[in-house]
Length: 204
Image (cartoon, rainbow, N blue to C red; front, side, top):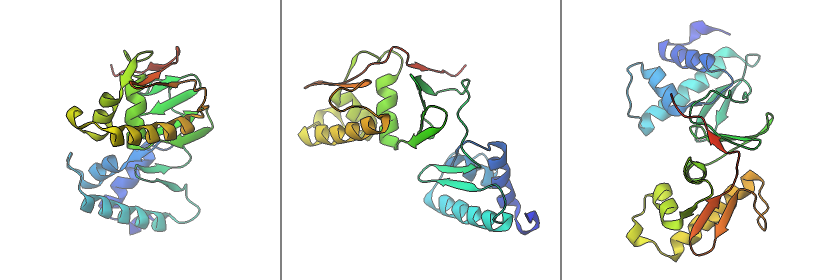
């Protein structure tokens, strides 16, 4: 690896990835590391510049270095993904599954994982949050949380779009559509999450 070919911002991005090796570092985190000014606002131009610098970092490090994996739409990971530690705040655990709402990684055991879209993460987090488990979460509440639609504008098209999303989420959870073990449909009302062992690690 030839660090001498990297500029200061590339070195800052690489340092951020190395400090978080084995986990996904979001685009926003890497952009803040690159800019070094603690900015909270991220625009498309920043994202493009960061992606270009990642490409240059890969080239400078060479093919024999630990790979930097692209997690499409989320961020990057240096090396292979590592199963999350139990003390990570905000993660949702149910049965053998662990969801990191921040990155959208859904682990099914310590080896197998898949990625949830932002909409799928919101839906699952809302259904399985403390206080919602075992209770019906109505269509309107889900649609408002996922897409921001006003409750007064809810129509059949919105509900159909939600149903398509939930079918996709169930598939990623490995659910049997005819007899789901976690996400149950309450016809005409909404959905209910059922799992006695679901729990969320809350921030201290």
